[in-house]
Amino acid sequence: MDEFSTRTYGTSSLDNRPLFGETSARDRIVNLAVGGFTSLVVLMTLISSFVFPSMPPRPLNVFFAVCILLACGSTIVLIFWYRQGDLEPKFRKLIYYMLGSIVLLCLCANLYFHDVR
Image (cartoon, rainbow, N blue to C red):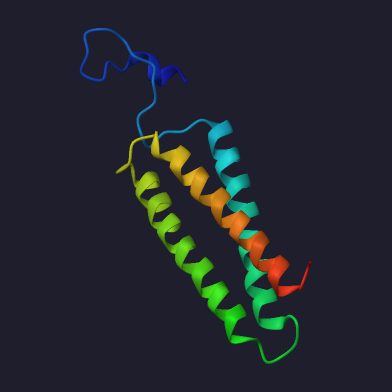
């Protein structure tokens, strides 16, 4: 952390804020935990869409899984741009919101797949 104290970022005074590409260890752990949990839920939902209630899968279940994958695609692009430094840090909240929406969509899909009433 000592290398941050010598940077000025184009100002006359010293500034110890990290640049876009630099994150704290806490931020990295939170990002990995949220991303890992969402990936696990999406993977479980994709498997459920093809396996439950029986083989062959219902077309509506497969359509639901494709819709979830399309939602994941746009989120993955935002995460990629954020990690490249092309997006401002405030977009991290939008990424978390989208990941939360995907988890809720997967929850609804799993409830539908398993005929929970």
